[in-house]
Length: 206
Image 1: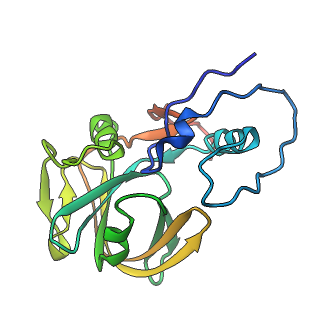
Image 2: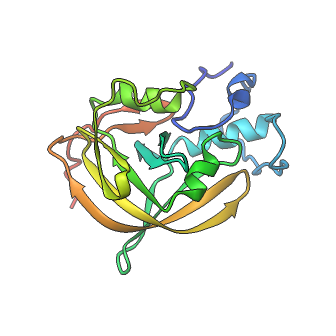
C-alpha cells in the first residue's frame, strides 16, 4: 500500500524532493535517520520517510522578507521559524543552501518575520513558488530599514541579523528582535502532515 503523496512543505527548497517516488508504509517500522551527503539531489526511501515523519510536527507558517543588496525586496515562505531567547530576544529560522535567495538573506542586515493568518494561504503559496515577482499583488508597508512588512498577518518580528550557522543542507539564521507587533487577525495559518490546517479550538487541558 502506497501512502498518499503529500503536498510540498512551505520551504524555499529545490524541486528534486518533489519528484521522489512514494515509499511503502510499514506500520511499526523503526527507521534510521539517513546519512546522505548535503550536496546530493537524490532522496533515498529512508530520507523520504524522515521528511514525512518531521511533518508530524505542526508549525505555523511565516514569510521572511528582506532587501537584496540592490534594494529589491526578497521573500520566502518558511516553517522553520522558532523562538530562542527572551533576554536578549532572539529567534531562528533556516533556508536551503541551494535557495536562489540565500545570498540576499545572508547579506541582509535586517529582515522581518511575517506570521501568516489563516486566510493567507495564497500569500504562503506565492512566496513558496518560483515566481520572480513574488510581491506582485501583496500589500506591504515599509518596516525597519525599509524591509517590507506584509499586511494582514497575526504578528511581525523585525530583526537584525545576529549570526549564521551551517546546518547540513540548510543555513541557520539567528536574528535579534528589534521590534515586534501583533496584528488584528485572530487565527494563524498552520502546516501539518504536508497540508495547511486551521486550529480546532481549545483542548480543555490546563
